[in-house]
Amino acid sequence: MIRPAGFRGAAFGNAAEGNARDDAVARSKMSVALGIPEQWAALRQVHGAVVHRVVQPGVAGDGDALVTDVPGLPLVVATADCMPIVVEGARTVAVIHAGWRGVASGVIAAGLDAMRALGDVPERAAIGPSIGPCCYEVGDDVIEALGGYRAVTTAGAQSADLWAAAIDQLHSVDVWSADSCTFDDPAYRSFRRNGTAQRQVAVAWVPQG
Image (cartoon, rainbow, N blue to C red; front, top):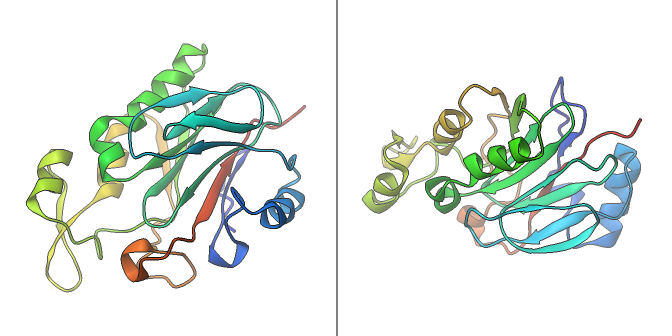
């Protein structure tokens, strides 16, 4: 598990810790380790830009970002190559699931706007383990949808740099990045690597007290 330095309520799990969004046993273990409640708010992720403001645990609906100002309410997204992003403000937190479709459709900006709508200012963001430009081979259609961010894989093929795209869309927010590629690192699940249906999670919360 990764706990980004300087963040009050953010954690990125790995393959060994399981999919705590859907697995109650894995969720219980992570909750105990993090000192948070075992009931989390979640989404049916659809690779879009819908954000849900939540005040209680459970499945909020279809979407790709959650935001709350309720202390002690954990928010979760599950990923296996897409970027998990946690954004903290003074009183709010957002967790964002961002693949190339979400980045292209503006899910990151939508998450930031949802925090501002609650009267808060996004201060810092953490980008968790996700597929890197070293391995994310894509066609011209993805590069065009992203408005650029063309890179080259270690094998010499065209790739997309989602990390750079996310940092640009986070604008003036201070960004921490794990700089860990899920495709390249077997500690993480990667759909691109082996077609897995399994996921790891990112969880975020406003601390109580």
